[in-house]
Amino acid sequence: MAYLAADERRRLIIDAAIEVIATEGLARATTRRIAEKAQAPLGTIHYCFRSKNEMNMLILERARTTMETAFGNLDPGEGLEATLRSIVATYWRWVRDHLGLHLALMELTLWVIRNRKSVIPQPDNGNIWAMVNGPLGGGLIQDNLAAAAREDGIEPAIPIHDLARFLIHRMDGLVLELAETNDESSCERQSGLLADTLVFLATRARPA
Image (cartoon, rainbow, N blue to C red):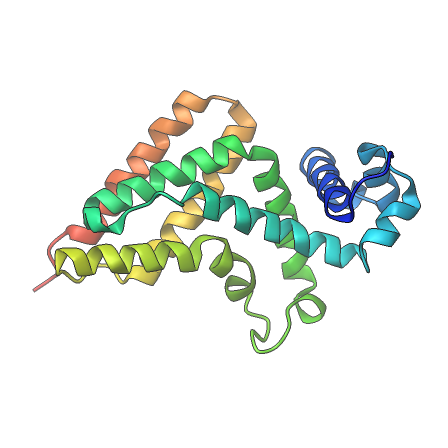
């Protein structure tokens, strides 16, 4: 690898790690295989990262950064229904544009589940939602939905944290559908159905 600034070198190695994990699985993502994909000497990885775990956690950070960028123009001032629909549409585009990253995230989430005691620091105490899904969408989505509900002066029929979890885990399924079918039109229709469902759940009349 030609001389590169440290940050750029780390970025390229993380790109390679994401590609290997997404296409070959976490078990195949050895430092040797990642170095090969990055066209870098094996020692470069050991120079840039304290451990493979640190590299894995930086992939989670990459996901958080790309999501914040994708959701940067969301406006909860539009109200709850419009915000729900915007969140689903934006989330779908984020998945579509970063499918490999999302597949890698699924592999890494399973890794976190299997190694939670050594991976998740206190005070989360093994709470994988707080470690993974909270930063990767949970907090951002909840904050925007809460602001949109305040804008409308309403309390959603379903608690906002439940709406956020329902949305995120349904989008996980859409990641798999896109990977299985490569049919973006069908997946976009599915995202529309999800938006309709969320609007119904959030705005339906509460039981008497």
